[in-house]
Image 1 (cartoon, rainbow, N blue to C red):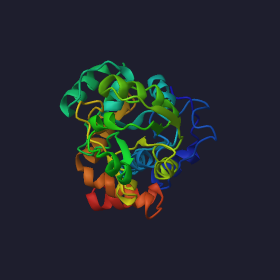
Image 2 (image 1 turned 60 degrees about the vertical axis):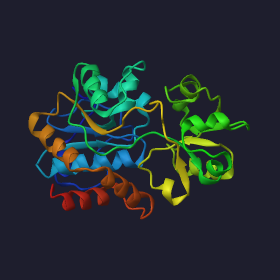
Image 3 (image 1 turned 180 degrees about the horizontal axis):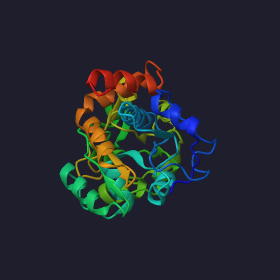
Image 4 (image 1 turned 180 degrees about the vertical axis):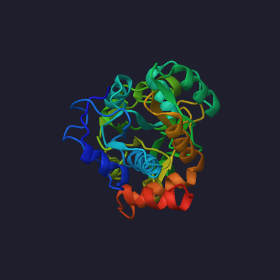
Length: 301
């Protein structure tokens, strides 16, 4: 049973709605029990995740499946327990980082290996649906000027930098496997850490450009990399796992709904994901509009 109450009026509105947010309480993770026929969809506190979650929602609604949008919940440490408890039914995730959340010592690095191990690692009551070709890979990113100054192309090259370096990222990143300790263990590079709570967004980019930090954890599908003359350093030792978009689903997502979501995953390409992100960042369009346009172009609405 879900921890929400969905009124008949709200359920009817959800079935036909293309709005970004559904009927929910102010606190998306509190409330009473909800109708088991309604699929609760969550997203990270990250615009790209919200866009994909909105695509899932509209694709399901187009097939007369009611959804409850609970978007922008937070980072993995906040929302995975909600998935595990059954409070959320469907969530756009990323294969490698999710696997590392449950198994920090995994040795899987390549796409197929990561996905196969993820399927075996997912807790009871959850399952990983088909992964998409679309990827959004964590990366260590520097400014082009810093790369030119120190002749940086790979993460290995950071060992040749003789000035103190500080990494910027969400506070959770300080203790994640690809945080400062992971960089030290894998590449022998010692850096400080500054928390910047915007998921590699404009505050992080501004800190890079201003020299407040020297490297940042930014997703490779983020259009700000090209727009701000940034460089993602090549990961030659596999510190970052393959990171494909993969829907995480509860037992409340039946076979019909899973087929709809799998069709979305099959249609989405890496180029699509960059374009979707660009429409959010550069055109400042809402997730609902971006999702509607993509579903129409993909022939899935």
